[in-house]
Amino acid sequence: RTPSMVSSIPKTVGSWVGKVCAAKGSNCLESKCCREVGTTCYAKNSTWAACREKCDAGPDTEDSAAWVAAVAGAQKDGNAAWTCKALGPKSWGLAVKGFPSLFCFSLYMPSRYEGPIMRNQVKKNAGIFACDGYDVFAAEHDTLGTTADGVTVKAILIPKIKVGVSQDGTAGNTKLFMAVWDKVIAGGRFRNYDWTVKVDPDAVLLPWRLRTHMKPHIGKNVYIVNCNKFPGSPNFPMMYGSLEIYSKTAMEAYAAGSRKCSEQLPWKSWGEDYFMTHCMDYLHVGRVNDFSVIGDDTCTGANCADKNVASFHPFKSLKSWEACWDTANGNPLPKASEPSAPTW
Image (tube, rainbow, N blue to C red; front, side, top):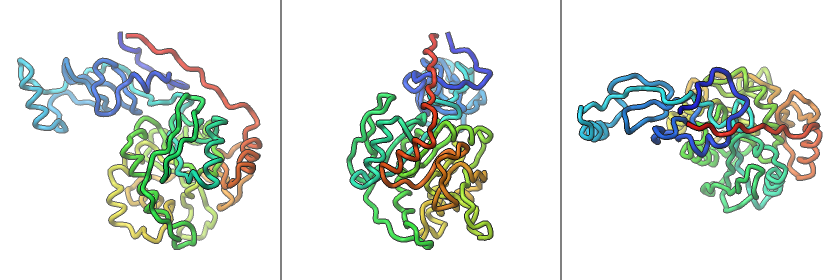
C-alpha cells in the first residue's frame, strides 16, 4: 500500500527516507516517495514515475524527443503522455532531526586550528553535525571521524586556490568559495532540505535554535541578512559569511544563475559574503533581516549566554569554542524520536 497523505507538518521523518525514497531524476515507481523537499512521486505510465513539485497530465515539453520516441515505441498505444497520478505523499525532505530541515556545511583547513575544532564537533555531535544533513570541504584529504549518525566524515576535495585581500581588508576568498559552491550545487543534496547553511569552522552553531528563526520563512525565495553593524552605510545591512542561510528556492536560483553572477558582477576584489549578498540581490532573491540569528564579534558582538541567538563567532581555539558551546548549550542536545518505516 502507499503511505498515507500527510496533512500536518511532522516533527521529523525516519532516516529510511534518505535510503528508500527516490532522488531527483530517478524512478520512484517502486518507492512511491521522494527525498526532495516539496516534491511528489507522479506516474508517467506503468514503467516510469518521477518526483516533481507539480505535474500536468499529457505530453511534457521537458521530455527529450529521443526519450519520448523510445517510450512511445515501447507502448502498444504509442502514448508518451504523463498520467500524473500521485503515488504517494508530498515530501518533507530529510528532516531527520527537526523541522524545518537544515543542510549545513563548512570549508576548513585540516592542518590549522580549524581541524581540531571540527574533529571536536564530530566527537560531541555538535555544530553542523547536529544538522539534518552535513558536508565538509577542504583542499587536502582528511577524515574527521564518525558522527553519532554513523557517518564517517571525509572532506570533499576542492582545488587549492590562493586567497588574497578584499576591498574592505578581509579575505578575498570569493574564487575559493565559488569552487565550494560549485561542489554543493553539483552534489545536489541541498534539494532535500528546507535550508542550506554555510558555517565557518570557528562558529558555534545550535541548529535547534536556528530552526526556530527559520520557521516563519519556510518555502520562501529568501536569504538571511544577519549584520547591521553600520546602519548608515550603503553596504549595510548585509550577510556576514560566518553564517550564511539560504532557502531551497534561493539555492535553486543560485544553481541556475551563479554563472550570470560570476560573469556580470565585479567580484574579484570582494570577499565571498559580499559577493553572495550581491549575487542573491542580482538574482532577485528576497532578503530577510534577522540580526539575532548570529552573535558575531566582527559585527556587533558575541554573547554566548544569549538564548535567542542561534550561533556565535569567532572562537579560534578549541578551549574558547568549547567554553562558548557549554555556555550556550545549558540543556542536553535534543534527541528526535525516529518514526518507523511504513509498509506498502
